[in-house]
Image (cartoon, rainbow, N blue to C red; front, side, top):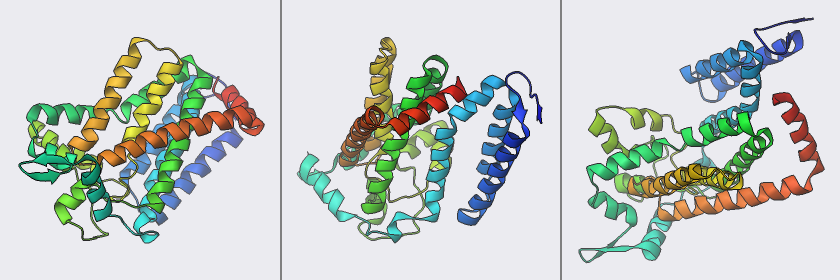
Length: 312
């Protein structure tokens, strides 16, 4: 039994039931783990709309399910805060940052975050805010481009994204670390209920009289997940696949955004330079690990072939 939905292949009753049960299970799990939020309904409505609109949008949302699953896992981290499993590192990272990258400021050694906090400017506030806003749209926009032009590369990019995130999550739980703004506000005292903070990005909000970054960071999954900086990892994955696919001038844009995000992470006190370097390293390891698995694993390649056939 099946019934056609707009253009494209028909939707079977089996698929309809699977999607509906998955949505119900997601809402139930979300309610039990992190509580009800409007974002959950928005996500389901978006998925349903694209799944049933047409054959093209159905393939698109199925392809992007990899990113949806990642978002759900990231959101559920709120239910399992890393400070419940390992000691949060406060002074160690701060002192090591100053030891390695310390800057002499009026006779005192300060961290790069502290230096830029003293020497902030409206121009850099706005520029950093613009760069930091790119960390989600640029990877997702690039993924959409690959989806419509290079299906196999889209899958490679998406799975590399997942591998890099999983590596980052492992470090989050084995080495919980406070961001620079936490030390600036709370010193070396641990307060597990500390909410997210916009830090230097508050100056961007203040200049434009908006609450953009305030709303974003109020939904953060874990304050003590500064090491590594996955904000620094994501654009590097884009650069790698941009260069791999020889996208010409687009790669200049990707490289510019990447370096801009790295600078903004430090300038706004969201990450130490050490966090940024760890994020770069995590991306490099994740890319190499996925390439190794893709080259050696017949199981992964068979799955990729099947998944590619679904979204063709």
